[in-house]
Image 1 (spheres, one colour):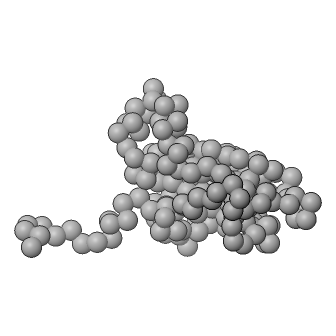
Image 2 (tube, rainbow, N blue to C red):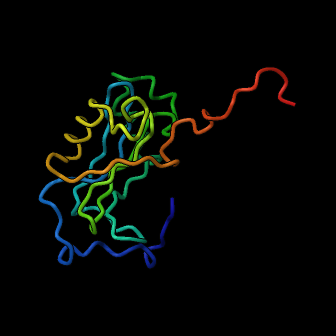
Image 3 (cartoon, helix red, strand yellow):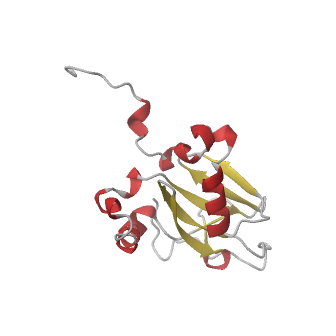
Length: 162
């Protein structure tokens, strides 16, 4: 994740120049088993990305994870032994040019783990509610950054690795 000094931080999005939808939020999320754990941010509080016309949450998965684990420690204690990148996760951004919410997420969250099929119904229902996306233009995408166990595609070699 790119960090910016206060002087080089992208300017706040000029809300007067680009009309924003009346509802819809950006942010980060995880899905553990059937539980969506979301950190939505209203568009008015979103940050403009350094390049392009996209609004994004200021939150980073790695920074939010400890608070999320603490919040869910009673009902999901297993989260305390997992790292933030060991649970399927994603991010909702808003493209001001196309007026579209773009949801980047782990391939396992798509129906049949196939991005061309769109998200599974429970995932889509949860995201639509958590990020207030009902009636909004939405596009789903994968990104290598949001992959759980990116080494799963490599062949497992049994025996001596030499």
